[in-house]
Structures are given as C-alpha cells and as structure tokens.
Image (cartoon, rainbow, N blue to C red; front, side):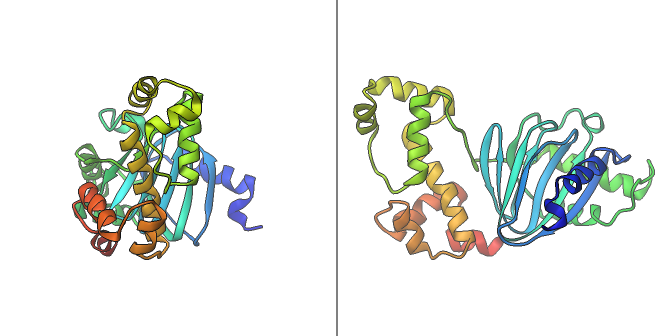
Length: 264
C-alpha cells in the first residue's frame, strides 16, 4: 500500500494542514494518473488548484470537473473527494476562516487569472510561518485580494433530492447519449410532466434540458482530458456531429475544445 493511502498518513496530513500556524498556507502535492483522494474535510477554506492535469471534485453540494485554468473554492468543513484524470500537480491554498471573513461563502468553481496562478506558485515556496508586515505576508494578502474577485464558473452539477428526479439523473449519467424527452421520463415514472419540470428547476436551478447538457459537458471534459478525440466524445454523448458538440462547448467556454485544453 502506498503510504499516502494509509488512514494514519492521511490523518497526519489533515492534522498538519489544519494546525499550520499561518493564516494562509500553500501545499504542493503531485499525484499519479487515476489517483483517488478519499472523502475528507478541513477546518480551513481550501482553493483546490492544479497547475497540471484535470481533477474531478465531489462534495456534498455538487460535482465539478476542474482543468488547470479553473479551481474549486472549498469552504471549511465541507466533505469532499478528488479524483485525478491523468497526472495531477496540485497546488492548494489553505485559508483560515478568521483570516478573511469576506471571502467566497460557498463551494464553487472559479477562474484562475494569470496573476493568481503566479502568486500560487510563489506561495508554495514561502517559508512558514511568515511574519506579519513582511514581503511574504504582503504576497499572501494579495492572494486574498485576488480570491475576492474570482469569477464564478458553471462547472458544477447539482443533484436533485426527489427520488424520482434522482433516478432520472443517475440513469442519464450512466447513458448520456439517451435523448429521451421529459415527456418520455414522465410516462416511465407515471408522473405529471409539469411536476417534474417544476421540481427540476426548484432542486437543481436548471431545466431538465439544461441539466442534461451540463452533465454531458462535464463528462466531455473528463473524456477530452483523458485524450479522447472530439468526434468520439461527441458521438458518445449523443450529439449528431462533432460540430454540434463543438458549438455547445463554445457557448459554455467561448473556446473550442482544442483551444480550451491548449490553454490548460
């Protein structure tokens, strides 16, 4: 067994992170392809970011696919797990809640600016603990300023709580090329179409069609990150052609799939 997979090793890592004396600390860890970080939580906020590789982050409030131009702001106390698609070089920031009470107040995907990317790299090599009023302290304070203005991104997928809707969502995730309409699902479940439509919006913040498109988008990011070709991804997710898939992708990210991953 790899030492990082031992429960006592993970417990020590979490203890060291949570008990670090500085209000902001950086942690750099490289993980091999396919690595799974088991569910855990921190007493500090965490900016989960990787300079290389794509992560799948699963938390109580949603699921996110995270390329290197994005990150997840994970609020303190939120249980989460992380899967690595390809080799991942994670560079996380841990922020004590008392250090910045006006930061983002919920777990969400955020964009990473070139400035913040370089600040994160710098934070990885700063001595700990750092002294208040020094250059090191000012670097960390600038990081907080950048976190406050991070753009929130649509990279999450909210699961409903209603058993009927949950069944639909789980079946769709297993077969994302399924093009059944809301009326088709209503007939299968013997439920009124309007009831399902209303519950979808209420519990996920999306219509049924929007939810399915988002599920396909996130799965596409996983497949593309793993090296699958655009044409194969498009057909696997139920699109009529690679151009139809690329059009959907461009609407979400203002980039084609190839441009998106070239930037990453």
